[in-house]
Length: 314
Image (cartoon, one colour):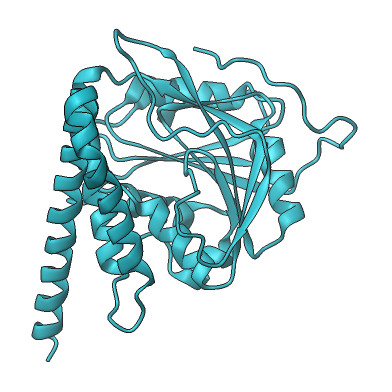
């Protein structure tokens, strides 16, 4: 499958890019993973190396043996681990270069994506993370939908406590120095863990707290494949709530009410709309209930874990 074409946003700019590592993590989606790899290799520009961290039950012999006809080294690592946060960290540990670009297996990149996001990162500098558009792909199944998308055409820069989550790891780039300064991704967060989302939100929040900025570059375009069906909606909302609840709880502090206010605003926004949804939109009501259930249970579990950990260290 090929992504829709995209207009070249950088006419007249030399094609040469500094050596860059593109990190692509996957688990048990071999066909999508292969299609994304081939899509990356068909881009106008390619990374010096493509680091594939595959947590699948079975290794991909095809990818392990793949030798592209482009100047891009394929480094396939069958990791047999669990958790996207942990896989991202493994990818950075394997990467040879200090410019790091991330995408995921259920995404297809536009032909100009790689060069665009790398140049945006070089312009933003080492104390920045760059993210871009994640457009919804065409439905690939009945009722197919793509979550976690953004198609805003206006670029912007975020700094400080912005009160929301703006990074999409399907489309992100940063320098290794930023990763090292904030301590990488939390291995307890992300798909494959008990708190199966928000590993990107947590990482971005810690960067902002450390004084970094987040640059949204709308000309860097990827497409989130609409392979999930409407039967996946409830589980997805529960998982999003679980990850977000753990993220909020991780950063809760009695001395600093910022994250508590974010938690309360998020929960209240869903709760206050429930009466309207009961009357006018029952499917949305059920989605909100699933999200809230995940949110509160995960926050409670995280706080209990923290208390037990503190008690055992005394």
